[in-house]
Image (tube, rainbow, N blue to C red; front, top):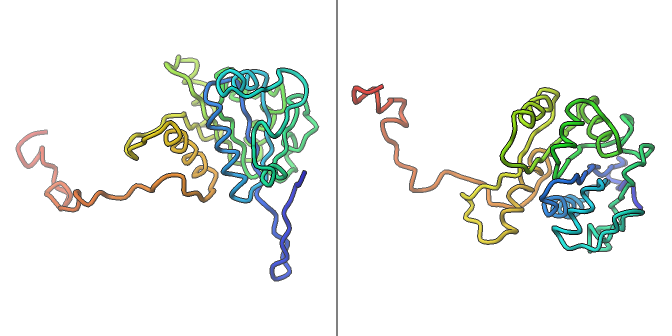
Length: 236
C-alpha cells in the first residue's frame, strides 16, 4: 500500500495529505464510506480504523459482509481498486500503527460516526484502542480532529463531553444535514454532512452547491441599512 505520493515539480517532493478516518459504533456509517471515497478521489492517503461496534453497524446498517473478527478487507470500504491502493485499514488493536504516533505526518483525524462511548473516552483522555489513540494524538499535536456524533436526544453527560472536546480543540460536527439545498435523495443528505467535514479539513470538493444570497433578497430595506424596524416603529 502506498504511503506517500511523490511528484518531481521544480525539484520539490510533494507529499500527499494523509487523513485518519475512524468508524465507531454510532449509526451513520454511510457518512464514513462517502468521506473515504471523496478523500481518496482528492488525492489524499486515508488510514481507516473500524471499531467492533463499527463493524456491526456496517454489517446491519449498510448490508456489507463485514467479518466481526479478524482482518478487515479494504474492498468493503472502497470498490475502486485504483483508489484502494491509497487506503490502509488498521487493526483496532494495532497501537503500533502510524496514527498512534505524534511524529507521523497526519493532517487530520475524523471520527465518523462517533458513538457516545468513544466520544466520552476521547474527551477524558482514555485511549483503549488505535481509534481513540489517533484522536488523542490529534489533540496533543494540535491537529484537526473532527468528531461527528449522531445521537438524539442528547443527555447532559453527552453535552458536557462534547464541550470538553471543543475546549480541547476538536471540531464537534453533529450529523445534522440541512435542507436549504433542496435535497432530493438520501445521498444528498449524506453529501451535505460529508461536505461540512471536508470543509473542516480544508479539502476542496464539489459535493454541494455553495450558498449565496438569493436574488429575491437583493432589495435593500431599512433594516439592511442599520435601522432596527422594531425601534423605528416604537417597539423594542
